Length: 336
Ligand code: AFP
Image 1 (cartoon, rainbow, N blue to C red):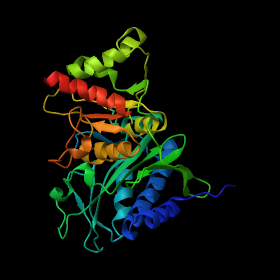
Image 2 (tube, protein in one colour; image 1 turned 90 degrees about the vertical axis):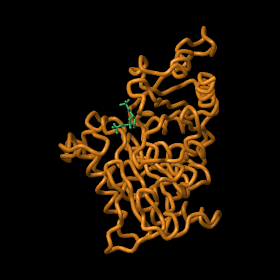
Image 3 (cartoon, rainbow, N blue to C red; image 1 turned 135 degrees about the vertical axis):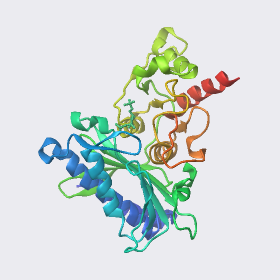
Image 4 (tube, rainbow, N blue to C red; image 1 turned 120 degrees about the vertical axis):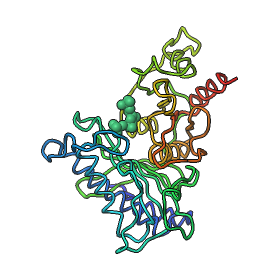
């Protein structure tokens, strides 16, 4: 059997080569990866594990929480409280930040996560996942919500797990994007793809087309041209995929290219889209850019956005660089 590189070996190699993964960050990534293994275990039980259906509560987003949302959140909080490497955590499922309990030492990192992304797919056995982002806590601060409000360029690591036919962990620490597949027999994350790269061009797009009547003109123009196919201005036919799990759509784009669009729309002019900046858009944008892709709000680079609130939302256009640049240009032209 050819030599396998585990997640731990990869992180130690990176520390030797780039000195960008000190012990506390390596511990953080390994603990999050171990928590994702625990979440994957519960997800795979389905109806056998009494983890399906609603938890009978709502989260800060006003969304009905699924049992697995609550369980995944608890797994990540409990796994990461004791290590001494975190100053605080933030979760899609928690209105306020989660300080490290006084019984544990604190560290320099901030961990943000969507514990279970794609919850609407849990009960119908479609791929779901966990998304996480790591920041440094500003020096000497007792962490507050303000400590988390840093642009995505400040991330030191980001990743996601996909709980699908394979259980996969995709990670960047700023030196490219690596993919690890869970060897369930041994319980190890095994490096299976080094330096994932997104093709600059694509013939595949991902958008929830049921919202078409609400789109602003630049999105209507962009998608309309894709639908016009060979006879239209693009001179080519395009394919569409939409899984309603961002992790699954982004993972497909990292593997074979594509563009993912979750635009703002006219249903609520005060709401700039559905996806959350700090623990969905920013980690995915970091990963996509590290893989040679692009990620914008339609108007600006996602990683440059200065957050104003912990759970703020943002429009997302990400994936194959030339397509993201095109739809972003259409937004600029509409402003002229
Ligand atoms: P849930 O976690 O509430 O299912 O939302 C998933 C998500 O945030 C993202 O993963 C999907 O791309 C997007 O929402 C799907 O949104 P629509 O249900 O509006 O298509």
